[in-house]
Length: 457
Image 1 (cartoon, rainbow, N blue to C red):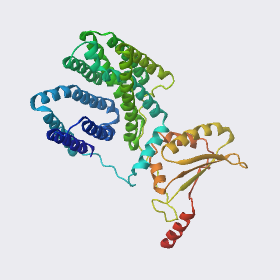
Image 2 (image 1 turned 90 degrees about the vertical axis):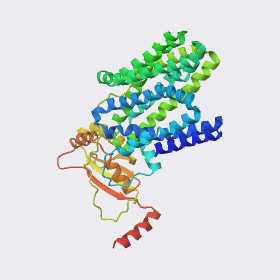
Image 3 (image 1 turned 180 degrees about the vertical axis):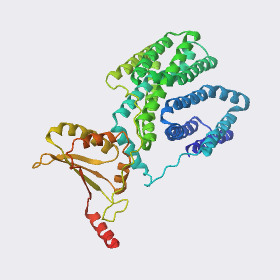
Image 4 (image 1 turned 60 degrees about the vertical axis):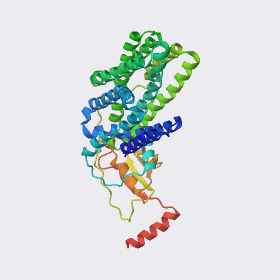
């Protein structure tokens, strides 16, 4: 859908150029619409990689994606310039519209894996909220998203001000800018090839910190460069480490999120990254206009030192290959009440018997259980202790509807099962947890349930 949308927008752009209807604001409007298409396309595109390759092949597959992207970005301006010089801007816009036929053909011939659905798809707003809730309850994803935004803010100066470096600092024209941009692209392709090998040998935090220091040094070299031969090697190396780190962020997000939410997690990661790009582009451009290129690049180099130091507070999570496949142990319980998928709220109560000597361990594990429950969709989670029988504990939470309750339990992963196993070790033999489910009644629900009961009988 997004590829078709962007092809139509690009075709309209070619038509407007042919009819002479283009103005700066119209061009910006079309660019904005293509950007919206990309914003919707990219998370789905990247999330689909894990549907094509095995989990242990993800780093290399994501790197190949980066190679493809950066080859196109490096060659695109040169090819576009050649087309413009040969058949004019209208032809360039028309060729651009035709390029969408390639991805559309690939998607049309791809046999995506079919998964059996036992529940209806989520609607847009609850799905967005579920994604925000999952990321908000995942410390690993929050760290990756935060570091990616800071990294994007500091590194975007090189691309944002590269035309100004070519024109003012080196004193060249379009050819010099093309050589600088090409150096960045060639370095990016090299970094994408080397990325998986480096990721396999070093911890994520060490890579991000080292890359931030290298990028800082390259910004200093660019700030001091007055000749093309001085700037090109620095930009080449900067492009390599830049793509290597973006690939690392992408892989880290995909390995830290289960399949049901990976597209939304990637969307939030890209939102953070592109917010850093947008804010940094404006900020560094403004500083360069007010204070000049050299002070701005030196300040950006200092910012990259801070990005490296951020790891002391919010380090990147280790790339541990946790099994995030669904546990698939949950079976929909049989109930005596006639429920519809939208019946709710559902109140779940679980009573535990915990010997006093296991209390501290139990409370520690229940904090993890709370995070998992709420991350997967539970609401209003509480834990209470019986005042009379102090070895009895009551866990209680809500699900908005019966369908939400089923969906929440289907989201439990293989990695989450360890907490359940550890909890079971704390309970006396013959005293398993007692689970009770309730339908919370309000005034409107009361009349509805009377009607359901009447139909049921």
